[in-house]
Image 1 (cartoon, rainbow, N blue to C red):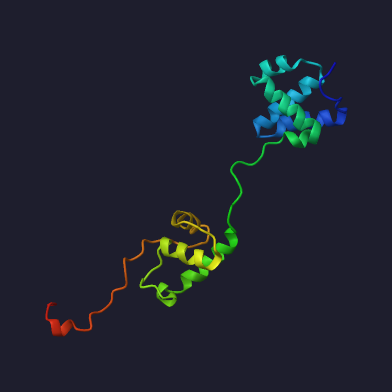
Image 2 (image 1 turned 180 degrees about the vertical axis):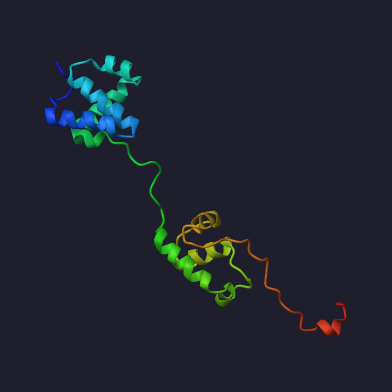
Amino acid sequence: MPIIAPIPRDERRLMQKAIHKTRDKNYARRLTAMLMLHRGERVSHVARTLCCARSSIGRWINWFTLSGAEGLKSLPSGRGRRWPFEHICALLRELVKHSPGDFGYQRSRWSTELLAIKIRDVTGCPLYASTIRRWLPAAGLVWRRAAPTLRIRDPHKEENGRYP
């Protein structure tokens, strides 16, 4: 007795075609497992043939019964963004148009630490300087190391006589 519900002929052909066309070989393995189970092969034999665990086959069967062949597709790698990336990139572009001095900072250039502080003040998103540094190329901005501080002129330069 087959372990999965009968698969219609058209769907089997589409699955076979997907196995040949896809670049995702894990998806192809999962489809192959379903076709082998449809032919009546045992779970342990399918697992041995495809070099995977029987528990994986069981999981794939659940995915297939719930969502069909679409449920066997691989999910994209990584995780979604946590912060509103486009909004913060637009804010970065606007901030860089101005000098840090315009916001009351005694700096001549923006540093990623200073940008992170300003973005935290404006948006409330606790971003770190390393995140800002990673996002700058995506925002179309070139990052250079910031100058340490503004060069504040000594008003008593001539009086002191310390300078040549």
